[in-house]
Length: 92
Image 1: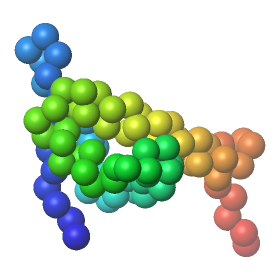
Image 2: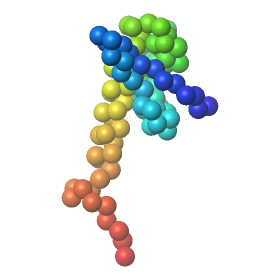
Image 3: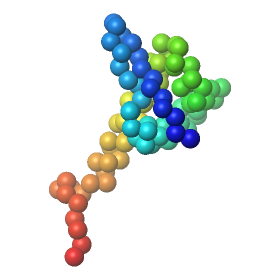
Image 4: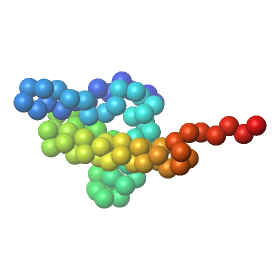
């Protein structure tokens, strides 16, 4: 299910997005952290956190932090997938 979630967090009148705009990237990030979030909070679900983040500043902050972790993990996975010289080799 692809939803058009546009969660944002307001700080000092400036609204900042919590989730990536790209739905594929958002789903990828969520898949990286969902199990860990639910393991750390056995009485909660990641879907419930996203729902609550629509109206709770505390949950907005929690979701923002988890999504930042996911973004870092995704960057690390991408970095680990690249060869040492930073170029993909093409076999002849």
